[in-house]
Length: 164
Ligand code: OFO
Image (cartoon, rainbow, N blue to C red):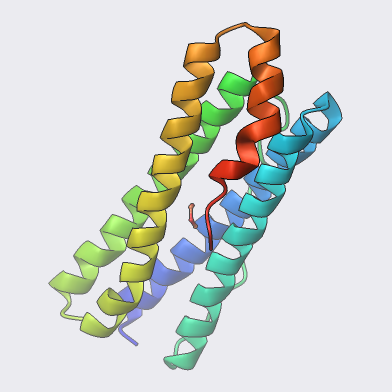
């Protein structure tokens, strides 16, 4: 595996690990606040991100690279509102998308079509996750401060769960 690409994939492993930790912290915040649907949503998102990380770890190791298991950054622990929670979710997904696009760009520069091909799965996944995050944020903006709106949002959110 090309050294520069191995480094980028190891960086990506860290971003996925950070997202997993961030979403677990978000799930825990929602759980404590009594938003059980939102908590389940983020527990599942956290599991998904862990899956994305593991998929990269296995890929790097299978291609004669060496995956480095990173220390994760301390996630943000508290939020003033559901709106802030979901703004953080969208920002996190946009950040990961930008990093994946960068890996793809470097694969093309270095003519690593194998990794380029592998990363297409992540491109599709990011598209889906960003779309879900934007849809949920739009709904929260419509709801505003309406408490019964928050109740219904929490009750219905699992309908928007992604698949991987
Ligand atoms: Fe790893 O899929 Fe989003 O971030």
